[in-house]
Amino acid sequence: MYGGGQIFEAPDYKELLKNEDPEQLAEFEARIDRGEKIEPHDWMPALYRKQLIRMIEQHAHSEIIGALPEGTWITRAPGFKRKLALMAKVQDEVGHAQLLYAAAETLGKSREQMLDDLITGKSKYSNIFNYPAFTWADSTVISWLVDAGAIVNQLANSKGSYGPYCRALERICAEESFHLKYGHHAVIHLATGSPIQRKMVQEALHRWWPPLMHFFGPPDKASVHSEILMRWKVKMASNDECRQQFLDMYVPKIWELGLTLPDPNLKKNQETGQWEYTEPDWEEFKRVINGDGPLNKERLAVRSTAESRGRWVREALLRPKAEYVTPLA
Ligand code: 3HC
Image 1 (tube, rainbow, N blue to C red):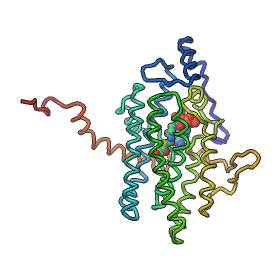
Image 2: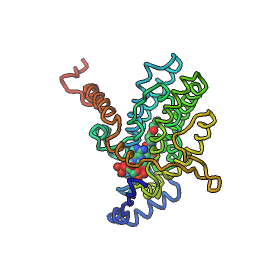
Image 3: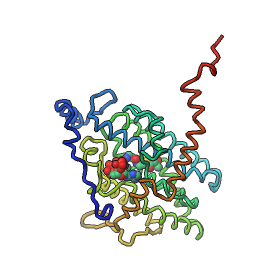
Image 4: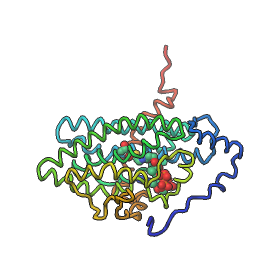
């Protein structure tokens, strides 16, 4: 059970929406039901704006923090081709963050504020990037399976209601599919390589499986935000639906490589068509997403250093002081 039996109760939305004009809210929800896109200057309930900022900002943070575990392997990649591909992937992830911060800014939260809230721990990023990438195989498993998980959830969300977010996701998903293919190719190379390579990728897979099962969020019955996010088509599939789709697509691929997964209860129920698995450790999940994971402090320290070292560039570009700028003759 999520949180040792503690099930989050979704907030009382009637209470949260009671200050909205009922006619405007009804028209907004009719637009959502018709499948229309909501654009930045359209009327929207304050809760829609708040939820979108939270989710898009968290997604953007996940992209720049997500670049860190793999980024440390660029200088140690086994060969120039792998180095080039990994460099391109990491650059893509940072570019995804820029797209997403721009989408979140359309809702009224500045990039500076979002980055401050990341560094102070006020806003979250994906649990999975707080784990160490011990070997080259870890970076290949991330490229394959974390990006695969990201595509499952982002492809669904790209059909959602908020225009700027959906357009950013369409672009992101196209690039994620390249990451997925690169990662799969790299894992196959190791899984069909020498005994040492095979052992390395098998051990990496066992390390990353538990955080991958957390990646899609808590079970639907414990999800705080799913109800309203799905009602307003911000989230187009539930956490468990994304997890099941991921298992359906990738467990057979992992098994056909002769690799094992660290869950003896993992199997597909042929009657229900659902994957059964050992309940993930949601206490660990809660600790990690609230700052107490293996590398949370290190990840934020890297971002904080980048922020302070880059401040002079932003100030020179964004707020040139008169004495710096010599007027053109
Ligand atoms: N990591 C960190 N926090 C998570 C989480 C995760 N994997 N899953 C859920 N949470 C948090 C939620 O933020 C919420 O906490 P909050 O109230 O303090 O914000 C709490 O756990 C309860 O979870 P809910 O299910 O109620 O939250 P959501 O409805 O927001 O669902 C989500 C979580 C599925 C991650 C959803 O927010 C989402 O689809 N986000 C957009 C896509 C995204 O962020 N994808 C993952 C990272 S991108 C990536 O991997 C980059 C790739 O290029 C490598």
